[in-house]
Image 1 (cartoon, rainbow, N blue to C red):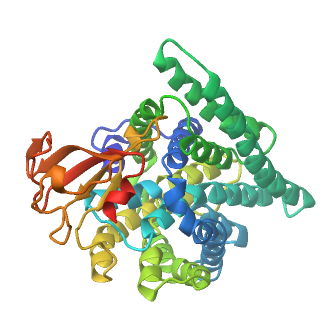
Image 2: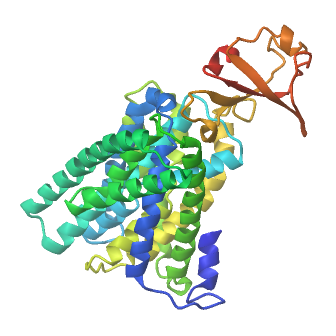
Image 3: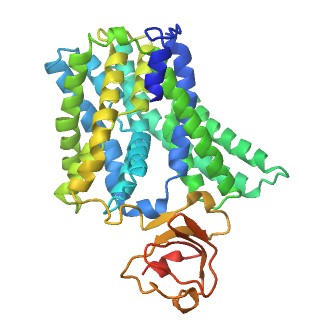
Length: 441
């Protein structure tokens, strides 16, 4: 919606705001991606993601590389682009967009089976640094040629990105555990500074700043640090703000009058990536794991392209390399097509494949924004007809002593429970405790 709004306000739109400064757009986009990627890591629950960590990481690394290479080959042989220019398009658009996938799943209240949600979350959150690294390498090849320095740059991107990320994460956790401020807002400012430093310092020595930021986000999000509840609320808001600014600015940069010239190649690339490149990468990698054919189909279809791809196209436009094709508008159109078409069909496809929980909503939903250094959790549990607590009072429901029912949602009514309160089918119990999973078994 904000991309379309930006197009309306842009140079070719109804308002006609003149804006085609890709250098300014690059700086704004870089800052926006820092916060988006940091919060993507910060919000990842490693305990939930651990069972699918290996296939997720392989999809985000090897899968992204395979998708980019296949797309580059297609662009060269079918669309007659030069080799490096085709690889540039593939690298720029090789990553998937986490925000697009999960906004669709959450808005439709889809709870995917078999850990697919966690798999898609880790893959989408961690493949942007890989796509960025490939984009940087291809741009270096286009500007300097295939010399040995490119291999050194590749090593530096990975080594300094990973090493810098883990080192800064270790130092940040120690600092945040011992830092004490009278005003809690200063603690949030300190974490913002950590996120910015996690990007800037590795970039100064040739590392992958986005990879470093994502690693720092994961480590901090899964560590016991002070004021985590406040941090989650702050970064959730700031990430949405950054996405709005990013989408609106990308819309401003686009020129609808230039779209007709790139529609056919953009549609061809989108179709190839959707039905050839992404499925080849998905089935090739996930065949090593015990996953059903239907699960592979859904993972393959959920490879939505989004804002990060368009941002990397902006980086290409400001690199001093001048491709023969309009890379920015090609990538812009492919991403827009992917979100609208694939995004619209994702919920019905998940239901058709039988990969959505029958309840239509998550039976157990963890409130990350309520988790703090205390170690307790607040979760929701929807009471089903088969549950032993149905039609029993709370005092007779044989609940574990370490679990408290702090609220009951019954339709539009919110009930503060007492010992004599009777639990009904369809009630949503808000539970609090150190280990609420005992109540669900």
